[in-house]
Length: 243
Ligand SMILES: NC(=O)c1ccc[n+]([C@@H]2O[C@H](COP(=O)([O-])OP(=O)(O)OC[C@H]3O[C@@H](n4cnc5c(N)ncnc54)[C@H](O)[C@@H]3O)[C@@H](O)[C@H]2O)c1
Image 1 (cartoon, rainbow, N blue to C red):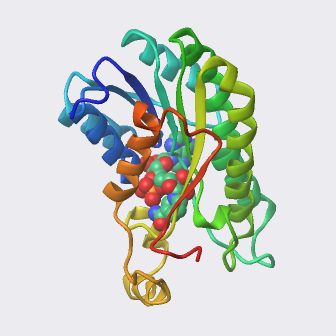
Image 2: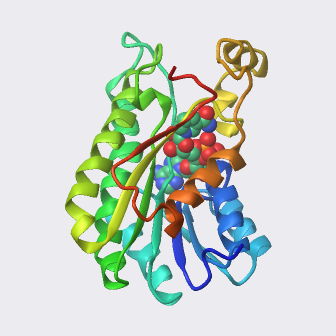
């Protein structure tokens, strides 16, 4: 299937984890992909593996100037059809332990990053006659989770920002949706031991961790024309965690 032939997609935080799988799958389906991340060695290596259809740019999602550079890389590919606001950090701490720096780090990457990305991409998507933005929230953006007040705040914000942007950008034929993964087997979960992660998933209806490629396929669906009538939606992909 070559759903993305001639399309250009920018993936933030795409050097590893879900974003890297999305980049690989997009390129395999004909897209040209700009991967932006602060992990320069990993990002450059991924781009080299994917080949000429992929460009890596250093992108700190909290920096407007970095977004301008990432958009310029997309323009060099001919424009922009899709943006995945995928970059995120998860540094869980209780209310008692979370200091202002922990709070502000989460806001800067998970929330300001989505704001700047959406703001930077919208005019370029409009110039192509429309496009699709997919924002990575979490099941924590649908309910809550213990000991992660800052992360929870930002993932609820991403859910709300997705709907606000969907309303505002519909006139430009730009769709905006949020994806809400449960526990997915990536580097992000290494903050806890493997045993603790496996113990936690026993509580889930499907009783296993999700895989990055399972989330990536949902993201590709929302980026594609198959989802042409879907905007402002929130898609859980969580093994039933939100039941
Ligand atoms: N893994 C999970 O269980 C899970 C669950 C729900 C939601 N999510 C969300 O999915 C998204 C992808 O996470 P993942 O599991 O692939 O984790 P990951 O840690 O493997 O990948 C996150 C990527 O974001 C990048 N990043 C961090 N700060 C950045 C910044 N300032 N600018 C640009 N890039 C930055 C990292 O370098 C990394 O490449 C995140 O938004 C995360 O919050 C993950």
